[in-house]
Figure 1 (cartoon, rainbow, N blue to C red):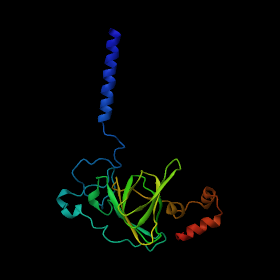
Figure 2: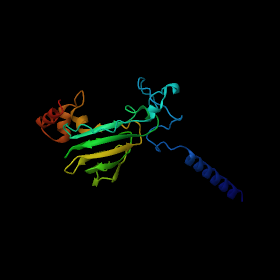
Figure 3: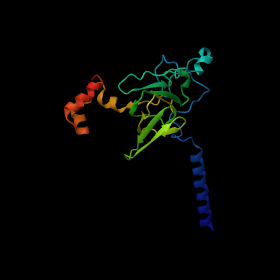
Figure 4: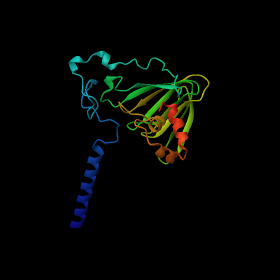
Length: 225
């Protein structure tokens, strides 16, 4: 009987421990730390702290801090990629500070591409507003998923995975994307690899891509390097 009582007590302790763990905030539940106040409009003149930017004094906050019209205008797509990302993150919209979300507008010329890139601090979801857009991403297991989407269709890109969007139609295209981070960060692979400053050594790139140095130099020249 004593053995049964001991076993029962251990089970109760185990259940209590599991219950406590389930009630604790999960570190992966959001990309950014949870805010500890109603709002914290960013003081962009200060340096970034652990939980975003320091707060503007509440006495200086106005209604305008919570509204943003930066995504209204079409982006200039006359660049090498034929696409333009207009960011609505905390750097452009200080009211997002500590709230763990942001949005982008992406405009595409015919044939334009938002080149392979990743967001190290955020999952991305988006919707096609106009046009026909090929969306794809590659997993860490090297599996490629993709689909051509039209207006009204959504997509999701898991955090940190390499992905792209390409205008697959004959006219312009537009997507709106959202992130669970106020500043998701973007690593654009072509620029990261071939336009970094200082440059990645050519022998690293020739070995990695199994090409001659003139190929690497040719790609770098496309980006003004």
